[in-house]
Image (cartoon, rainbow, N blue to C red):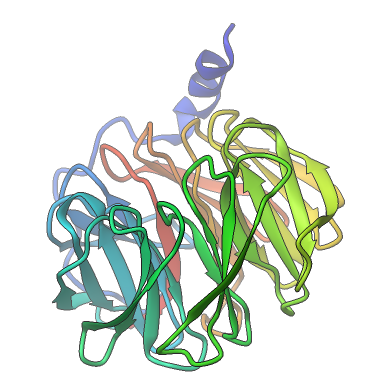
Length: 329
């Protein structure tokens, strides 16, 4: 049996046979919530991150493609095909504003101390600085390629930007002045890069591949990787929770739990198409730490524990590209 057929059979008992006919009452209900993009249906699905129950569907502009949350109770949704952002209040699970004037906004990195977001704009080959209070673009930084995945260091001082989905180079921006980042240099990974994510503590950056089964770990300030790890089929994505890294392969249908030194542990089987991954921040949410990976192919969300044990798989949309975990209520 082919890999896709095997995974479909393995996950079938856990996946709802069809989408809910009606979402439950429009209330956040409190607690830890996964916000999931319903890419083909113009809304964000709010899901109880412990039970998998759909709490609310939040209408947005068409084509919500990515979502990222920050410490000030806001989440930014990028509508790549429509050149705009939606800003959500994560406590109320409601839209509070729209930011227009972008080309093809892809992904967002939230500032850890300022009400700012950095948004990659692949069409304009730039990173936009968005003021979340005024909900406006206050600066743009040109980069030498179509900006996509990006990550800001925990101290807010350094921004790494992959220049494409299979990128020959990664741009490094100095964000010491958070409203006026400056391009300092680029690095060439040992493969075509896809995702870039700073590890907790700010000493390392993990770079995944868009073309090979490899992940590179860079020391902060270095242009050469310190470690090369084997990984599942490209492209991979990474999320962190203090002492663990979670590396997905959407094509393989796996989440591999690593220690921060790169040592691999448990491998969880998840629905095929589960590319992006997010883990709750224990400093921002109450309760058990939980991870979520949505499936672009199946429209499912897979909720897993910090140890990588799959708890819930549920279909919530026709297609689900991205998710983040917040505290609501």
